[in-house]
Structure formats: structure tokens, C-alpha cells
Amino acid sequence: MRNHCPHAWHQQQHRGRMWAASPAFRRRLFLLRSLSPSPCAALPGNAACSSSPSPSTSIRVNAMSASGPVYEADAEAVVRRITPPLDRARHKGQAGKIAVIGGCREYTGAPYFAAISALKVGADLSHVFCTRDAATVIKSYSPELIVHPILEESYSVSDGERESVSSRILTEVAKWMERFDCIVVGPGLGRDSFLLDCVSNIMRHARQANIPTVVDGDGLFLITNNLSLVEGNLLAILTPNVYEYKRLVQKVLNCEVNEENASEQLTALCQKIGGITIMRKGKADIISDGKTVTQVSTFGSPRRCGGQGDILSGSVAVFASWARHFLLTNEYPTEKSVNPMMLGCIAGSLLLRKAASHAFEKNKRSTVTTDIIELLGKSLEDICPAGLLSSTSKIILNEMPGEAIKQERASEG
Ligand SMILES: NC(=O)C1=CN([C@@H]2O[C@H](COP(=O)(O)OP(=O)(O)OC[C@H]3O[C@@H](n4cnc5c(N)ncnc54)[C@H](O)[C@@H]3O)[C@@H](O)[C@H]2O)[C@@H](O)CC1
Ligand SMILES: Nc1ncnc2c1ncn2[C@@H]1O[C@H](COP(=O)(O)OP(=O)(O)OP(=O)(O)O)[C@@H](O)[C@H]1O
Ligand SMILES: [Mg+2]
Image (cartoon, rainbow, N blue to C red; front, side):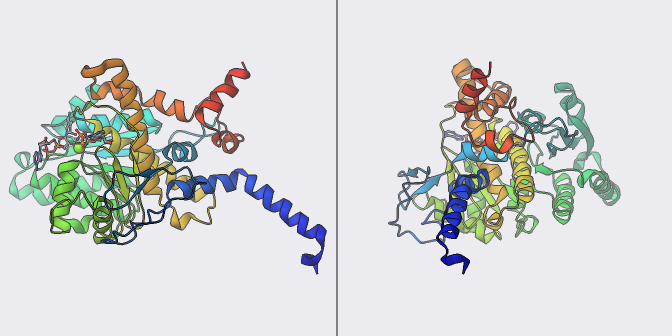
């Protein structure tokens, strides 16, 4: 009879209002808004699209897409939501341990950029697994990185040694693997066939150990020629640039990139590779996991200096592991429909773009990747100030926009 009692009805209403006002409800809403599926994105070829987004959501429609809108992610809300508080009770490692697999004779900048960006975003430890030639150079860039000189290229291994060297490399990396929250495969890896075979083994091992894996740069060259390395791995994220995307589309979909149906094609690509997450980099970063499509198009910088993709892959690794941890520890009833890999891409893309914008403001045409890395901290601080966060206040404060937190901090003196 409880339901017939007017007092009970009022209580229910009151409880409903309390729930709607609660941080938990708003948190859920934020994430759902950020990841609301594009009505056009569900099926490849589904170009008909007439529905518009609810006016109550903060999602903007990108009218540039000829075949239908791709919704802009509420990326600031995502960053605020998944960034963990700086809590005095936490110990080293709890904010994330990242490893970059990359770095060879030719490229030492790319793995450095990815690994140092992971630290600057907020991870506690950042490792690099690279060749011996590259290791000393990378160590000299920064004492913050833990550098393992274990990879080998064909020129340094005789035919007879290959098997034993390959198995030694895997054993060495496997020792560390369980500790990592995410690995980034590919920045500055090079394309040596023996080295890529060894990295394939590392990727298989990471997959068995359920370690999220961001694949970028030469890692994309590797997987484009061996799709089974990522096929069906829901913890894999690919971050192709315009050329890497073109090669992937040609290989997987057997056609050319179609700008008219960009979101449908990206969705089809994700589905064809078994529901992995792909962030197609460009003027807008378009992100899909084969079920939903969203984009981040906040203006960054007109400078296209090399290395910005490396910052992105390191940042995405940190945010993806934070998002995964966040969803696991906050008992989301909707967690199955919120993909932490997509949240990681959204957050990483926004942060890189904000940092690139600040760096360009300061350095104009001479902006280089190092300038952008230096501004990752300020950019995150603008969105999600570190000083006020604590384990007890994180939810309330995290609900507030960065500006409001700053004002509150100022009024507190
Ligand atoms: N400082 C460093 O050490 C850097 C190293 N990098 C590494 O360099 C390696 C190669 O990456 P890249 O992005 O340079 O890849 P690619 O070697 O595929 O491309 C090099 C450049 O060639 C051109 N290109 C490639 N394919 C093309 C096509 N189909 N049509 C027309 N032009 C085309 C583009 O200008 C492209 O940026 C990766 O391991 C990457 O991580 C980059 O991340 C940049 C910074
Ligand atoms: N035309 C563009 N306009 C605005 N931003 C862009 C444009 N192209 C790329 N970006 C931004 O730059 C970032 C890096 O993308 P880019 O295509 O340069 O990667 P990349 O080629 O892999 O870089 P890297 O030199 O590190 O390998 C992306 O997140 C994207 O946000
Ligand atoms: Mg790249």
C-alpha cells in the first residue's frame, strides 16, 4: 500500500530530485553526453540521417560532414571526470605506469615525446623499451624516463642467433608487463623486420595480460600488415595520421578514403577489425569503436611540426588507463556502454590541442613539439586544477568547470 500513500509519493519525488542533483547522477550524465552515439554512425552505409541532438545536451553538431553530423564530445567534462585526484594517501605508481615500445637508430625523438608526455600529463612512471643505439640518446634527453636498451635490429643479430635473441627480448619485457597500465607501441620504432617480429610477440603478450595498447607510428605499419595482432582486442587503440589511415583503409576495407562518408567509413573500419577503437587524426580527431562516433575539433595550432602525434599517443595512454580505473571503481551501471578507450582518446586529443594552442600563442611559427609538451601541465590545470582535489572532495569539485574552481580558490584566498 506504500505506493498509494501521498507521503510516500512525495518521498519518492524527493528522492528522485536528490538523485538527479547527486554528483553520481551528473557524473553519469556527463559521460553519456560525451559519448552519445551519432545517429548516423550505427551502420556503415546508413547515410540517411534526420534526427538532431536533444537541446538539453551540450553536444554540438558538426555540420561539415556531408553524410550526417558527428557529435562533438564534451571533452572537458571527460577530462575532469576521469582525472584522478592528487591524494596524499596515494603511493607511487597509482596514477599510472606507462611503457613506450619504440626508439631505434633513426628515431629517438618520437619515443621520448610519447614517454615524457605521459609523465607530464600525470603518470607516475614512464618506461621506454628501445634499441641499444637509441637508449643512451633517450636517457640523455631526460633522467625521468626508465629506459630499457633491449630491442635489436637485424644488422646486430646473426641468423643463427635470432630465435634466442627474440625469446630473450620477450622474457625481458614480460617481466615488466604486468606492472603497466597501458603500453604505446610504435613511436620511432622503425621498420626493421626482425625488430617488428619481436614487437609482435610483445603485443601478443600484452593482449594476453589484458594491458591496454595504443598503436601509433610504425606500430601501425606493423599491424596493417598483420591485423590479427589487434583484431577483436577491445583494449587496443589505433591513432593513425592521414597516411596511416589511408593505408589501413586500403588494406582492411579494400577501397580509398571517402571524405563524404568519413564517420561511416571509420565505423566500418573499427567493426571490421573486431570493435577496436580508432582515432583518425586530422583537422578534427574522429574517434570510433564501431558502435559510436564522436570527434574533438577544438582548435589547436596551425603548426604541423612532427612529434605532435607522439605527444598524443603518450597522453591517450595515460587517460585511457585513468578512464578504465575510473569506470571500474565508480560502479557505473552504464559502464558497459561507456568505452574507456574512447574516453582516453577524447581526453588526450583535447589536451594536446589546448597545449598546442598555448604553445602557438607564445612561439608562433617557431613552435616545436617540446614547446607543446611544456604546456601540457598548464592546459590540464586550466581544465582540472590540481590544488583543490582531494579524495573527499573530488566528486563535488570535479563537477565544477575549471573557471568556477579557480574563482572558488581565489575567493578562499
Ligand atoms: N623526432 C622524431 O623522432 C619523430 C619520429 N617520428 C617517427 O617517424 C616514424 C615514421 O613516421 P611518419 O609519420 O614520418 O611516417 P611515414 O614515414 O609514413 O611518413 C613520412 C612523411 O612522408 C609523407 N607521406 C607518407 N605517406 C605518404 C603518402 N601516401 N602520400 C604522400 N605523402 C606521404 C608525409 O609527409 C609523412 O609525414 C614513426 O616511427 C614515427 O613515430 C614521428 O613521430 C615524428 C617525430
Ligand atoms: N589539419 C589539422 N588541423 C588541426 N589539427 C591537426 C591537423 N592535423 C593534425 N592535427 C592535430 O595534430 C595532432 C597530431 O596529428 P598528426 O596528423 O600531426 O600526427 P602524426 O603525423 O602521427 O604526428 P607525428 O609527427 O608525431 O608522427 C592530432 O591530434 C591532431 O589533433
Ligand atoms: Mg605519427
